Structure formats: C-alpha cells, structure tokens
Length: 412
Image (cartoon, rainbow, N blue to C red; front, top):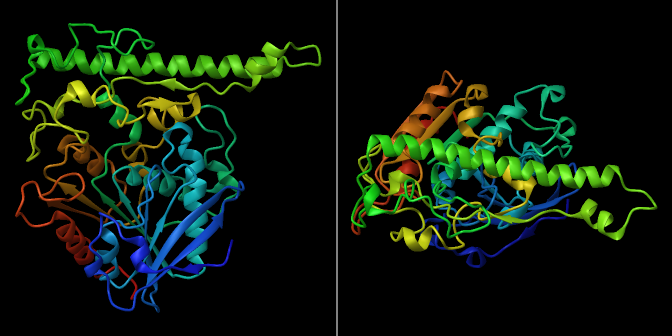
C-alpha cells in the first residue's frame, strides 16, 4: 500500500454532491491498495477525525468519488470510504469475483482503522456488496473458487472482513438480471444488429408501442420475457463455446503447433451485444406502475437508445458476460445473495426509478436473511433527483432516512 495523499476538496468537485454540504474541516485523502491477487485499486477517505465507524460506497463499473451520499453519511458521524474497482469504466473486463477481491482490499484496510464497517451499495454497487457479504459470511473454504468462466479466484486467501451493517440504495436485482430484462429479444441474428422478428419488436405500433406511452398485451409481455431468456441462453452458449475453443487450443499446444493454433490459444474474444435498452416497463407505465416517466435511463427515444453505444453490456468478453451480464450465469445478484445477508439491512426505493421496479425490490426485500431490516420509499428518480423541477431532492431525503435508521446502530 502506498502512503496516503491528502487532496484538496476542490479537486473532487463533481455533479453528484453539493460541495456546500461538506462539513468545515473535512480531511480527504486518497489511498492506493493492492489486492491479494496483485491488482491495484484506489480509494478516497473522507473524515473529520475520531470516527469509530466508516461507511463504504463502491460500484463495480464506476468511480463514485463525489457520490451524493458522502456529505449525508458524514452527518451521521461516520467516516466515508469511496473506492474504485480494478475495472472501473471498463465493462469489457469486469468479472465480479475479481471485484470482490477489490472490495476485500478496502475492507481490510479500513478494519485496521475503524471498529465498524457499513457497506452502502447504490444501484449496481448493491449487487457487488451483496455478493461480497454473502462470501464474507462463509468460511474461507466454502467461498467461490472460480468465476463462471472457470478462472481461479483467490477468495479463500482473502481476509474478507464481514460488514456490520448493509445499506442498499436503489438496488436492482443484479447487472445480469437488469440486462436480461432490457435485452431486445426481437434480434434474430447476434451478428446483425438490424435483424428483427416483427412479432417480438417492442417498438412497433402493431405490438402496442406509442412514443407517448406503450400499451402491451399480457400475451405479448409473456412471449417477450420468454424470448429475452432464450436470447441470454444463446449468448451464454456462444460465450462458453469461445472459451472451449481457446482452452482446447491451449491444451493441445506443442512445439509443433502452427502459428494459427498459437493465436487461437491466446485469443480472448470480444463480442458485441446489440439492442440492450428495451425493458417494456420503461415504455408501458402500467407494468409495475410507479411515479416514473416514459423512457429509460438512457433517454426517451428507443430507436436511438436501443441502438447506441452507451447501454449496459454492449461489448463483452466471454468472461465478463458470464460473470457480470448474463442473467442466468452471473452470481452477482442481490436477489440470489439476499438470503445469506444476516446483517442489519436498510433499503431505499425511489418512486420514479426507471431502473429498479417495485416487484424487483419487493422480491429482494422478502429474500433478505436479516431479521433486522428497514425500508424507506422516497420520491425521486434512479439517482434520487427530483422527478420535476422544484420538487425536494430525494438524495437529501435518502440521506436523512439512512441517518435515522443508523441512529441506534452506528458507533460514534
């Protein structure tokens, strides 16, 4: 671990927090950590000094150094740790089992300094922290030994400090389930982004779509969901075949191998997953109704958002697909991990969320293994922002709800 560096707060300004909400005298430092498998990760520590508890914020795919909950959690009397993973900003290589080792580097570092560790998982961070908590609650010999693609992972060698408390803010069921619910199943050829099965195309007027708000029949929804699952099964098989070809070539390598055989043995495939912004609930507001508006996280014109490059899981390796983006093969699921989470757990649901829907969150809530759990329902979009201009900030309300729930649990 490198020596910490104090950093000016002005250097961490971002769109997520309001700098005016940061307390006077706050100390911010950046720390470089090394995981048990030799990767380097960075974390930002915010503190006033003398805290006994630390709240951790992390996302497997993003660096949240200026997350809006930092000032809110500082008000609770805890230090706040915001960490990056080794794959931040790089969906192509993200394998959640390896990201667990990144979390471990942070919790191990923090346990030397604080008595109490609170994991605060926001959106995809909830899936990461739920998976970590499940594995940390297990004896080392029972932890996962390989990724879904077969890569060995050293979870048994990691300290994997058990968190004391878990908080989930706008937790979707998992990156893979989120993507499976958003895949456009009318794609008939994975090699042709423009291929269409008209009977399944979600943005056809014949199937119930209107720009101002769709109305899909129950029969269409059922066929659509089944076809989404079949598409994931197809991509899973494609990813596993890529891995099989590479592993077979590696096993057969010899001094007499041709250059082509050597290239095959070293080939890590990259493949595109087209049309990943097509969750019917974003366009038909009668499906699992909330306060949300028509449109997805990416915009209101699905003929653009479903085709552009900013959606989830657009480019993958076989390893990242199976570990992160497959709704059938990924283990990084809040819903799957929830029964193993016995720590006190608090959940925030935003009422206008275009990414997390009540049925999904209710399933998580029921599955949680904790006997001490709370929930708050707050008006706001997926990021806690006001639904309409002039409305109160859901971010501040979420912070207040978390503080109230932590009041008799947090060491101060």
